[in-house]
Picture 1 (tube, helix red, strand yellow):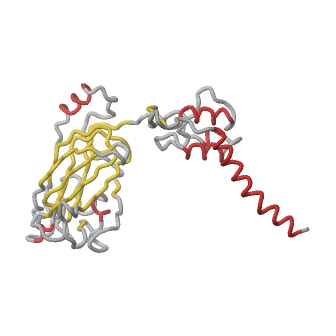
Picture 2 (picture 1 turned 60 degrees about the horizontal axis):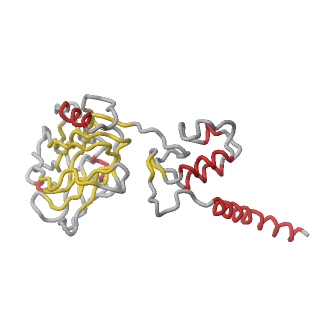
Picture 3 (picture 1 turned 180 degrees about the vertical axis):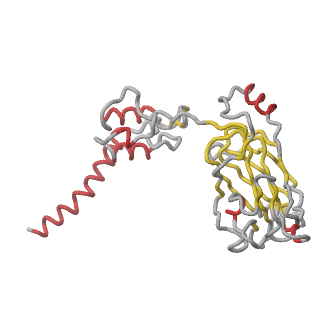
Length: 295
């Protein structure tokens, strides 16, 4: 399937976002799905949605072989607005999406009616705050043929790392729903700079970065810290200046403040000192007990 992405790139440029890494549409690689082993049975698991099984990438078609470990189907429970089936996908970075290509459950006729009927699609950059990207999408049933081409749903979603499917009905109602394959088609990828003080490079300057600092105090900073996270003026091994730099940036994500003014932006040094003392005491007590027994 060819993607007319020029308009999307134009809108992206007008939005003033970061430059895209590519102007040609491409399938996002390395997509994972939460709880990949869940499914109706050991063959019809969620992992089959993103592993290319039964999928002809060149022709962009999917086989009609439901019992060969190439399609997903949920457990045979009622699917409705009140009891939706949730599929959470994680991309391997931040992407600007042009479309989401979906191949419905492609069982031989007439069992393709076990496919997804209606769903809502949400996107997120952090996996916490989701926005509606495609509300009330109705999917066509699979063809039941090996030449099944699926559907390409246009979407313009910038800086997307997480996608959620909220499935609320099957093709023919009833119990359980299924899909064959899902592909996320992007026209650009972002590589945001590491936030200052984000020593572990997870996108947020938080307590985990302090732990990394503490555990590597006196060690090789280049080996311990994510590239670009240390103070440019810092030098030598991991030292107290790295603590000061971390505390100055505590609560930031990607260089943007992530805490509200009502919350303390920097933890009190005494609190961390107390933690250190408590940890030291925990290490010393067993040694003292061992020494008293020896005496």
